[in-house]
Image (tube, rainbow, N blue to C red):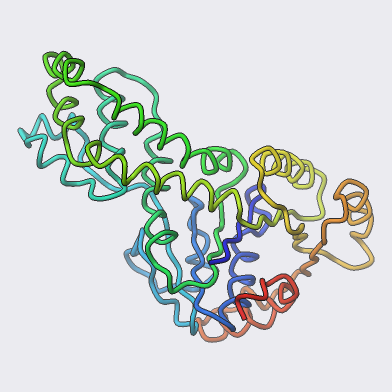
Length: 311
């Protein structure tokens, strides 16, 4: 499985770039494009049907061999609401099957102790995990990541959640008993299936972290000073994480006007390929079939960068 991430400042065309790249991959093998950005622009880019979104699962797009998954934090009844409704802790925990089993711990820590926890990041990464680990039919996965401020949380989520789970497993029966005297719901969780099967779930989290570390990263920008400055911030984040930057995508490029930005990037890019994508008003035309054709046609700019094993 080849994993590619498109990252950068909001509004620079990450979703369109992801869709065009995924369109190229889908011409040769089954491909999943993941909308991990809270704005869910991929739905508009691919002209998915109106109405309630199917989230946290792969759905067909109408484009052959291309599926899309819109990722968002799980919707659940929090522990405080469950207690007010006299819902048992066992029933409360049933809302979090499989990999999502660490979400209730963050919920309870926030509710009982007022601690700031990143429930959204935990919920999103655990929703993505089965698609990366359990479905071996995808040859390529293309991820449209949230703007820069969410990138570090996304990259660190796998390791951070795994560490949390391993720490919970180390609690002894006496410590759990003491916790249960004050917070029986937390004690019930610590004695539950998710923590008990930590030797299964923790390696899955670590594997996702390794997959993201070994993925290909494309930095997306437009020919403007602020997006380019932000692109270099993203470059630092990805490099510090150990990710491999495969290229820079400059959207809305106008020949004869924006060459100075290309020259500036070449001076700092250390021989990274620069992929220029011109402003294309056809991408705004309605109609899913026409849109699909445009994604394939315009996406040819990415053809040389599609991994050979996807063919």
